[in-house]
Image (cartoon, rainbow, N blue to C red; front, top):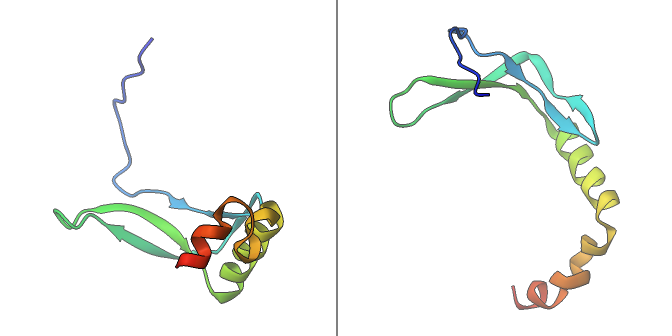
Length: 81
């Protein structure tokens, strides 16, 4: 059965960044995501900094060790680039 949306908030909720399965970023200072077509507010996302970026890269490297340092299936392609 289809759900019909009858109400929506004029102000979008702040979306968290998820790093290593946990919310991250500063939700107290969200960044507005603007629709380039009409300038309307699409969403608000938690601001992430350098430490959050490093945590995301470290979590990805741990989750996919075969892709770290150009190894695995992407190794030959990485050598070309």
